[in-house]
Amino acid sequence: MLPIHGSGHTIFMGIQAFSDYTSTDHDQLVWKFINEHRAALASCLDGMSEQEARAQLVPSKTTLLGLVKHAIFVERVWFEEAPTGFSREELGLEATPDESFELTDEDTISSVSERYRHALEVSAAAVEGKTGKDIFRGNRRGTMSLAWIQLHLLRELAQHCGHAEILREQIIAARNN
Image 1 (tube, rainbow, N blue to C red):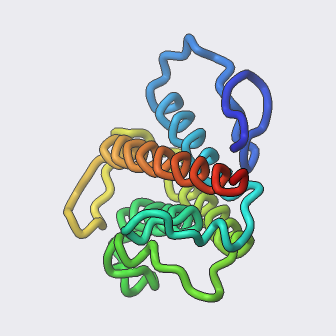
Image 2: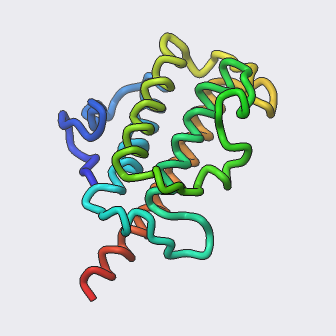
């Protein structure tokens, strides 16, 4: 995985690693943590073959490629559905999170990575100029603050980064056997 510690180096899509540990700007810090987790999740595919990225090593649908594909769904739910009120169907999204892990023949490391980059660009545009105090009214759960969305997204990304790290360990260990 790409290193995410240190200062001044790019880790993914121009995201810089932390260099200011004294910042008190809460919104800036939350976005920094979210972006580092986004980068870490995206990098789980680095050095993997297509077969390894699709390897189903646990009983669930969780695979490395499926985790990144699911992250696209997550970004689109929080930064396309929630701000606009368009339904998942209108946005062309899977109806449930579980369905978003399902891989098709067209899903490759390259195609999923590119779609993730695009989803992150759309997400960035959706929150441009907004703070955690802004309210999104379009999610099917109801009205919620951007602060709630940020923390939920951070929790979910952290969880999936942990899943990805364990799957990568298993894949790399299998290479060595």
